[in-house]
Each structure stands twice: as structure tokens, then as C-alpha cells.
Length: 92
Image 1 (cartoon, rainbow, N blue to C red):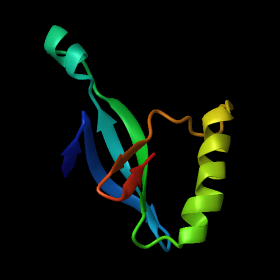
Image 2 (image 1 turned 180 degrees about the vertical axis):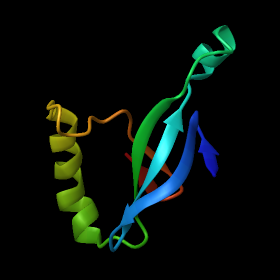
Image 3 (image 1 turned 60 degrees about the vertical axis):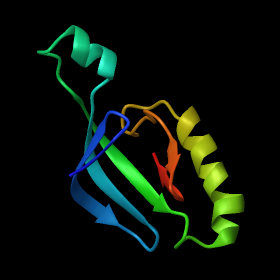
């Protein structure tokens, strides 16, 4: 398991040419310190590897994907919890 910024990555759910999707859990440090019984949120985490993705994708298509998924609000579509960039990888 990988841990960073309150997130714990779990099992690989699927992968493509330059992205992978994992199960993830998120626990806010404030919530955990206030309530030791607090439960983590269960999430999915898409990780796009900037070193494997074509430059055109990162410059043109990826920003559009982020803009669209941040605006969508539908019960059949996963909502964005947060977006992070660490060491050339994008975590959605």
C-alpha cells in the first residue's frame, strides 16, 4: 500500500496505456485526531503517469478531462474528491 497526504492506495482496479485506477481510502488528519473511531472515505484514485503520457495529451486533452469531471454531478458518475500532482504523476 502507498500512503500520501491522508490517502492510502489499495488494490489495482484497472489500467490503460498511461493511467491506472486503484481503490483508495482517505482520512483527514483533523478528523482522525478528533475522533479515533472515525472511518476513512472509500474512493477510487486514477493515477496518470506524466512521463508515459504523450505531451499533446497532457497539454490539450487532460486539462479538458479534468474540467469536465469537476463539473459533472450525476449519481452514476464518480465525483472528484481532489486532484494532486506529485513527482510527475497526477492523482485524481
